[in-house]
Image (cartoon, rainbow, N blue to C red; front, top):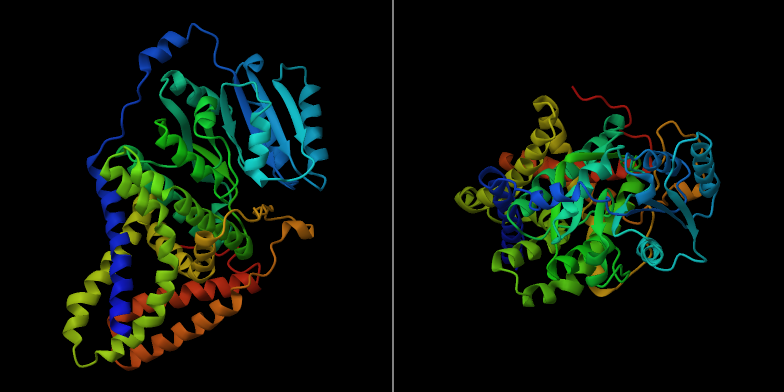
Length: 488
């Protein structure tokens, strides 16, 4: 029974690898679609610019929220056409810090947009609930959204708003950049993963005319698109992904602007990072459960449906990776008398999965302008970190398939130099730590056994597993592990 399960797992992961290769092929052969509505945008230059509401959902972000408010107040957009909503659910001194920034800007004598500081009685619906509550009072026909740790440039609206001259456009998404990329091994790995997401996965879906998603921040929505899609809903933990698919199913077109990068902070601690990834993995599974049937029954083309299915089922890779790692060495040892099978079947499937992932992340780094020497050190690190998340995120995927909603755990953002941050800015120890420690030990033993038996080809794959789980354990128990580590 072991070998059929092993090959089913390996074959399924190879299919996900094949999907990555298709995305890479799209980037090479399909040009970015030309923006429509150019003449309409030119005609609109003589008219008053559309009214924009900027929504800033914040919850206990004392270190970064004031910086965001200051950046938004500097937008080079007509102040009389701009409204800022500070959707503040904070229970600490974040509110006072934000008010101080607004008061300081008001005392400078320059024209400021209308600023509304909205407080709710409770956190019903968490971020989605705050956005929905703000939307009910918003005056803008366009809605820009920024998370607390982002710092948009003054020209953000002047670069995104003209695209909405096309009446079919429902959303514009900018790319994320990373202010603290060089802080630690963890932040370097996260930057590689996110660059691959935006510059390869999202870009390829956009170029090919498939559905892609708003990433929760650094984007602008047409208000009517939100309302016609059913509004912000909080029965999933990825309200952005959920709304994105509903809006595109309703016929709205999305635009991706990878040339517009908005810097933000990456989680600096492993437990904070795992909390964020758990929420994303669980929310994606919930969105799959909620929307897969409407997607498959929609009038979208088969290519679009297949791409959407691959996107929403990508979280299944986590439990599959755990199973593959546990089965790898036993499956090799069971076939000691037939090494040709390993070369003819196993090796190509492994290479398809790993080479596709490595190629995808490497392409993201090239498109981000990263030096090649850094790329080939950081890409394997990112792959190991992704594997290290597999046990923790497997629970998220399974839970998301069977349970709606859940607690939206905020990802704490703490500056590298902050000392003794309050307790609510530190994620608790993650339950999966002992399991990851056990798996790390298991894979180091597997490496020794594979080397002893001469199965040298399996060592690189086993090492990725051993390193990934070890990084999770070390980062979870030693918060400063990996900080300040310089790569050549």
